[in-house]
Image 1 (tube, one colour):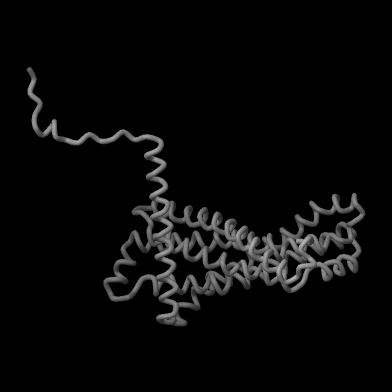
Image 2 (cartoon, rainbow, N blue to C red):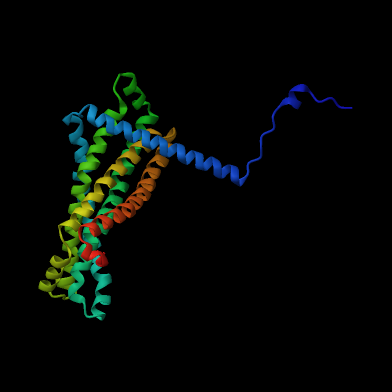
Length: 285
């Protein structure tokens, strides 16, 4: 009769992995990740009020995020307006509403497409760059060196990038809106032969300052989300070139998802506020 050793008999058996177990682990990992991002965001905001970053640190970051993004946002905004004009003209012309093309193009740009697509382009250009830069610093232990020297890495690395995105992305959104309006007007009036007076008259009748404010208001949240998510991914980058590349990819993907989610939530909130302010126009939203 075989004798089972005590060590073998007392060794616990590992439970087999099931789909429910894997789903539970994924849920717990997601909740932990969201909590870590929230903690990271709170620390960033606390450091903004505790100590103002030096201008020698802010100016290069403002230049890299703001000035170098102007051409990308301007080109994107121009083609948004041009594509909207080309795609919408025939449907409006069939209904005899070609002169109202300006109101549809411009309100779509300033309220939705301009802020969202500008933020998406900046998430790809700025967010991925910030994540890769901070990820490289994490892998090469530069962030650990800052901590060892008594400098808080969040204050020195994250706060300037957060302020740059928060303050400059709304300005870049206005640039994208302006170029989109010009691009749509040029195609509509010069290529599609829409009457320019009627085009701008309907634009003035249907697009007001509140619509522009709604788009700029959203862009503040988009900029904050891009900065926090990208910096968090860079700070938590895994070792090696593969880890840095994955951090940059995750920064863009997560930022894009959050931008769409915030656009939906802020759109509902803005419609509720607008309906409360102007009850007579509720059916027009």
